[in-house]
Length: 213
Image 1 (cartoon, rainbow, N blue to C red):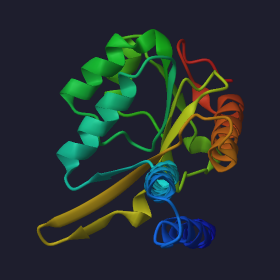
Image 2: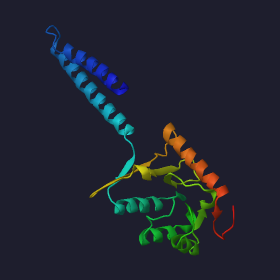
Image 3: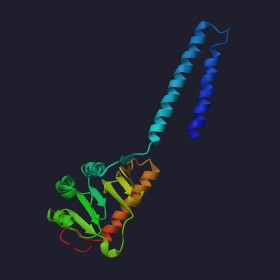
């Protein structure tokens, strides 16, 4: 709304500048000056509107199939830096993703509800798996944090309840924070995710060596 008001106000100013070019008494050179000034002003206005609209775009990944979800998760895991995954049973992990996780074992931390054949296999390959099942806690939201130990961490978050599945149609939305410290809302979300990780590290069981934390 604010952008629209500013645009209308600016358009009025540009129209006034262009209107000066049609005053009969003005020399031809001045008319050209006002026409050029008006066109430049319009170009700058359109660029500012485009830039602001681009900055306001929500960084979402919309998946329309299970294969797309797996591909996005694989891309997240392969991003540079330490990765933390908050999941329940890791049903989205196929052989390709399993391989990616094992390859990044020294830089990945996974929280799951309980031990499964998959988590056992990952642990045998020295992947750090923590279990929160005994606490009775079941996360309503699953998320992955890239560079979770850094201040510029990014959170990819999806709520399974918001996954739309109909006949021959699926829509699963993953939102990812920008990692920009100047974006207050994303910074707050990243901070909450880090607090959740810190809490789960203290109350969960497992980890390499199966030691209680």
